[in-house]
Amino acid sequence: MSFDSIDLNAVAVIFVAFVLPLWIVFHYATRWRASRGLAAQDEKVLADLWETARRMEERLDNLERVLGPEAQRRTP
Image (cartoon, rainbow, N blue to C red):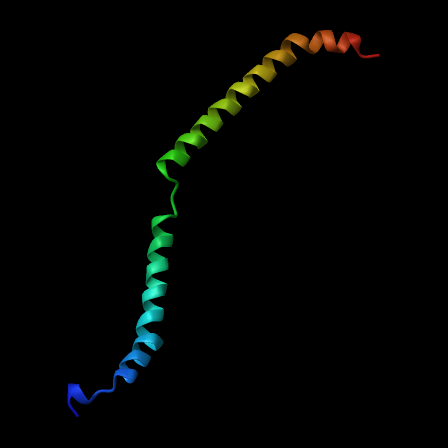
């Protein structure tokens, strides 16, 4: 049996049954590993949100400190 006598259908079946599924699995596994971390833009947005939350907390603390005694006097 030489290479010329191998049926093209058999090669196609072997490719579809074995090679193609492995190729797809390894492709998406590589994509998943590459996208596990945050992108640089996502890190910047997260840092900006963190800073904004910190400033808002500071402002609320100041408002509570300033308005705290006054708000207590107005409460019946």
